[in-house]
Image 1 (tube, one colour):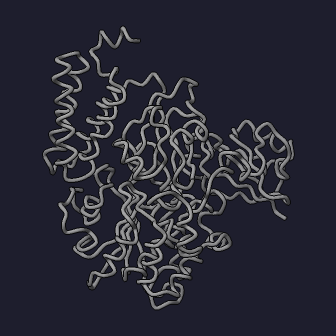
Image 2 (cartoon, rainbow, N blue to C red):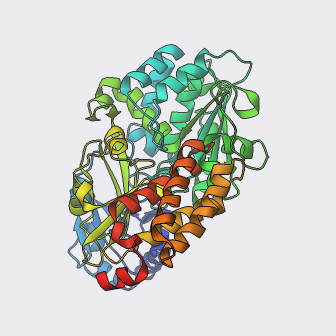
Image 3 (tube, one colour):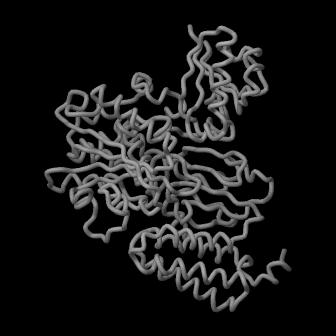
Length: 518
């Protein structure tokens, strides 16, 4: 049997040197005259172990990592191709503690299969959900997705089934499925991992959505900063089309569905669904007033389902294993699993898929291993650059949409960024206002002007100018932005600002006092 060596070509692994390792292994194979197949797979998401190289042996796959090019010669000398011992030996990948503790449903194949092999995808349960969906009526598919409790994984947590039902019930000569892959939040990479490591699951999820709502065309809107994801998705769409998964007859059925990959120009506001639609239509990305909702009048004025990558990629497992199976995971109204992305100043950075309900403390301290610097954790920002900063006093908060909302926070795209005790929360609050000012589409006054005034006012606070008056002004600005902004960019900017003021008041005291406190 020809040995198979798996080396990730995922962006995260490439950034950590995977390409150099792949070249070193290919060179070593040639030098030793060994015939082996190198498979460029996605990452499993344990980025603290990347580049993680795996080899298929008679006893299953064995992982080594993090591998450096300088390790390659000694790996081969140690019997690497048969899973031999080495200082980089990790054993069976699914036994690595970070991966063994996870509940992988959406990411079950990520890092396991060849991303562009439809055969490999099918061998690991791919297309089962689509085949089951083709046996049902569109209304029955929508009912199953609704029953599963799946909610939007892009930020707002809106029930996916309700959105689909609205589009299904709206009469039109043309309908669309739009996948929001404009993953712009700091510390998030789940969408990118799926597109680079298991692109067919997104294609399958979008196709099921199309059949369920009578939409015949889909678009994946990917941010321009993701060139590898763009290339992978384009190749996967071609493979799916040639195999009859996409086209005039989906898997030989009476249903038609096809899709295109579109690349955004890099505006953060285009992650907002209506600004995304404007961008897709070739216009400048500007937030639209609602109503009408995109489900009634979306892309090119037609009924449109807009879901993010993880929402759509979760649909195949629901259609394969049933709504009850999926709903069995989670807590409260937050059902199923959520891919938690752990980043920042943290020891074990990576993607951790788990059922809703773990506490923030468990995620940061046990799964993430605390800070990389070894210093105490000061704050954790959940939900991207517009998420609230939680102190250790709130680490008992369960990872659940409603639980976070009750404590003036939001889960968003489930990105977690960890900060140690050297972080200056006044600077973090200023960054949030500055970020909003730069990224605002400018359509509404609270966001456009409020964020600019916010930066100026926080600068006055930092300079010790009329602290009480300016703190009251920041609070007032946040209140206006939260309730007066047209979309979540301006509406959510108050979360990081107010949480910093509320939980870390000492960082907002005049400079001389702050220095004395240190």
